[in-house]
Structure formats: C-alpha cells, structure tokens
Amino acid sequence: MNYRRSLATLGLVLFIASAAAQNPYESILEAVTANSRFPSDVTATATLEERDPEEGDETSRVRMFRRDADDTFLMLFEQPQVKLGQGYLNVEGGLWFYDPESRQFTYTSASESFGGSDARNSDFGDSSLAEDYDVLSAEEGTLGSFDVWILELEATNDEVTYPRRKIWVAKDPQLILKSEDYSLTDRLLRTSYFPSYVKTGDTYIADEQLFVDALVGNKSTRITLEDVSTAAIPDNVFSKAYVERVNR
Image 1 (cartoon, rainbow, N blue to C red):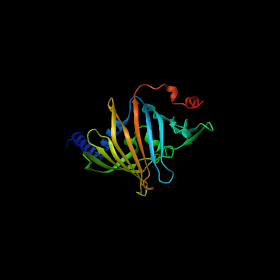
Image 2 (tube, rainbow, N blue to C red):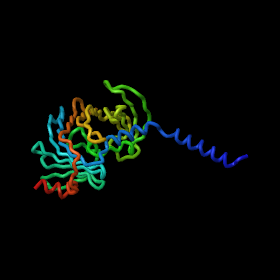
Image 3 (cartoon, one colour):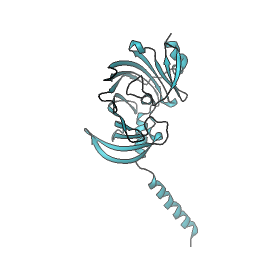
C-alpha cells in the first residue's frame, strides 16, 4: 500500500470538506464591506430630517469627517442653533460626545442614538459587516426592480449595535438596499433603507438613507449627503483639541 499517496488523498479530502463547510455567502458580506470602505478620507455635509410624533420634527445639519483606514470619524453639528458645536468624535477605539456649553467630552457608545435621531452613532463609521456577522441563511429575491440576496445575519461579538440583522443586498454592485435590525429576542427595532448611492473611485457611500423606528409609530429619520469629497483631511481634525478649537 502506498502510504504517501493515501495520506495525500486524505489531505485533499479534508481540504475539500473544509472548503465546503465554509459558508459561501460570507463572500457577499465581504463584497459589501469592500464596496463601502473608503481607502481615502471622506468629508460630506449631512442633513437629518427627523419626524417624531412625541418630541416634534427637527432638521439638523452636520459636517462629517471620516477616515476608514483608522476607523475614525468626526460629526459636528452646524444647525440648529441649539446644537451648534456639538460633536461626536470616534478616535483610538473610543467614541466621545462633546458639549460646547460644558466644554466637556463624555464617553458614549456606538449603539447610542445620534443626536436623539433614529440613526445610531455606528451608522457613520467604517463598514465592518464581514468582521462582525455570520450568515445564518440566504436566498435570492427582488426588492422593487432590483435582484437581491436576502441574508439573515447573527453577530459574532457583543460590540455591534444590533445582534441580529436581515439585509437585502443588490447583486450588482453588491450594496445594502434595506436592513431590518433586531434584538437578541428577534424583536424588530428598526428598518433602514438605502435607495441611493454615490460612487467615488471604486467605493460607494449612501447619499440617501431612511431609518424607520419599529417601536414608535410614524417616527423616522431621513439623511441626505451633499458635497461628498475624498480629499485628504489633516490629521489634527480627528482630535479633541480640534473640536475644542472650532468651538472657541
């Protein structure tokens, strides 16, 4: 008996079995992440239109600075006047909220509401779907006129905003068009829509986003991005000192 050949055959069988055991739909998450992750810096102006039957409607204007290479971002409120100078700074693995009245930085969470809206702080940072979720199931379908993959996801860590998600991913290019965000007990918390993207280089950013609260009826936040640029941002912008300086 040729033991070398037998061992080689066994190794090949084990390799094939291992490859087959891997979830083939994980590559879709990897493509979505790659299509939404910027190799360069990004700046934009975001307009948030909040509809809240309990607190009333509000429109805000925010200046966004983002650097995916370092997983950092800065969001500075320009309007309304009552929020002028407030900011969210994600730097060195920590997310901080700055209040210009107290001149204090307060540690906050990526899963917290952004400025009281239906957007979450994590919505403005680097896409990390491929690192944070496993695919539980997948099927083909349609969403409007788009052919999509419908994936059910489960978080691989407890640092994500939503432990379970269901996403509708366009087949070409592979971008999220809709997301249903769930709690650990499978309670629907939020439905998100991304009907429009703008392409810069080989990367896409959703320039129109709609977040609909599933717990409070008729509560939602629409975000539109303008003046999107991939010009380099000075390093000092991503610092507490910069946030304090622009508020003097």
